Length: 439
View 1 (cartoon, rainbow, N blue to C red):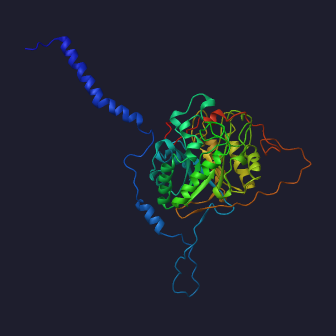
View 2: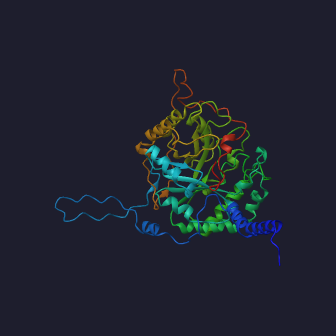
View 3: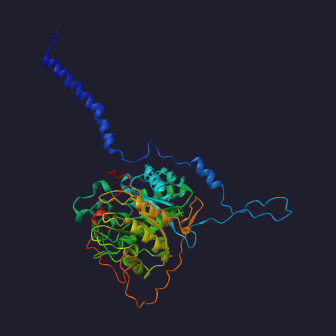
């Protein structure tokens, strides 16, 4: 008969704990580690949701004509052409959040704070996940908001901590995109976007004029001219599949010292619909107050040397470190009407090392609410909308004034501002994927 002793009891307990860890706890921990911090549960659907089927079946209509005196009935609504987004002479507003469609509470908080629903929600998706899920788009579109995806060919989870190595991921070198190694994945996305049935914006491989991403020509062993080749390769796959309801957004960072020349990275007007720009007040190298105009105007002037495509500010924000966020926002809305070629502005509504959120400051929220209440920002988006592909040219510069130039905080500088020597580090800490963990 086996005697029960303390050592044997301890051994049995240890064995039970080991078995439990191996077959129960370890698999759960592994799944938790591998699971996306943000994601939809369950298999990705392929069919259109019911709300979308109904919305697409109802064509856009014009306002019914008023019946003339004595008429027996009011004429039925007449079919109208698809509405342009944004309408001529107007501009849309949007936000970019870390959680994107997976958690819409930042969108709701922003909407409540500024008393205006954004027309565009921008969010990031990295190529590492190798899948297409239409819920990423449908969740946003159901709100009457245009989805804009920053589609990023890299794995943000493997980003190097050392600044100069951040763009080093050989798997995602431009040559691999050009040579077709990602064609199956790209085609899956093209077919998925085609199946949506409504227009979306694709901000592919943004801020390519820097060094901090694997698709930049300054990093990852990439060579001059390969960015344009990669862009055209991806674009052509979408075209071959028939995914035509895509607004292609070519989106560099605002120019800075040592940046790659923009004209060498531009794929051409046949491959681009909107020009996007990233620029912030309050990042490293831009601590001194600079207005919206001072940050963006020099780069827009450079762009106009080779394209007249409409401009969308795809990322912007202002720090409140010096208590000037509300002032900066007020000036932004005051200066925007002077730029009819800017058809949209997307605010980075998130907190990293710097808190860019409008909703975090009553004064900033009030300034934004006052600015966005102007009629030119009343630009609804629907599943029938078509993107504006042209914009009014900017007005001619005013005649020289004999008066001394006003203070820098009230008007753009006459020349190009002194740029930072590198990409602002606080901007560089922004999330690299819609599934980047918060914190």
